Length: 268
Image 1 (tube, rainbow, N blue to C red):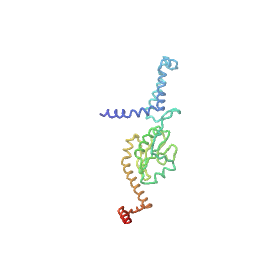
Image 2: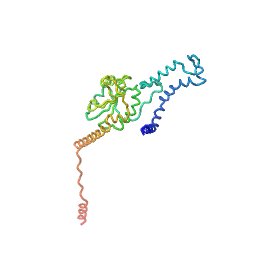
Image 3: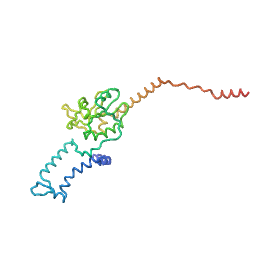
Image 4: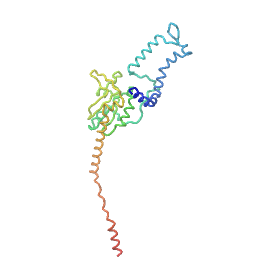
């Protein structure tokens, strides 16, 4: 059962995986990765290539090429912190619906402290980060599900606003592993942050999945409390409207029986 559950989960999400991987960025990356191997091993093509092998066989790898391939494999396995792409074939960006407010260095503090009853979840991101680009769709889905009057979602580009990066202690270095960073604010003060940062300033590894975010930030509980706040705001607005615009008294209509009696008297 422990093996079947992840297998069924993978098969269930397989159409979404195919839809994502068929983007031009990933197709071009795969082609560039296997092009060298195909050229070196294809008969009729490899015979015209130069080689440094002692036996002079151009259709086999020499020691220098083997060392390069081993080095590249090691780089890819070390958590792949870099992404190479063609300028004409950039990685896909999320362009779908979202309930997210974008901050600048001048608006973020004012917005977080405007209403102490509102809880903010803010993503600190950088446009050049592949992790931030892949996380954009997950964050947008969460905003569509949980956004309300008392729980709001925001984003700020710390690659553009360096002062915000320093104030909220989110490093923009690719080696810091702090991009993206999610911070929960209540009353303008930080309550929860993911990924966490240790005493040495290193980020603790954390997976930015929808399930992890809902659990770590208690989104279901926050959403229920925020809905109550929305109801209280609606009741207060109704009371204010009643004070400004009192209800107009209805005119009393004479009963039909009295009209009938008057008509009968006139006939007499």
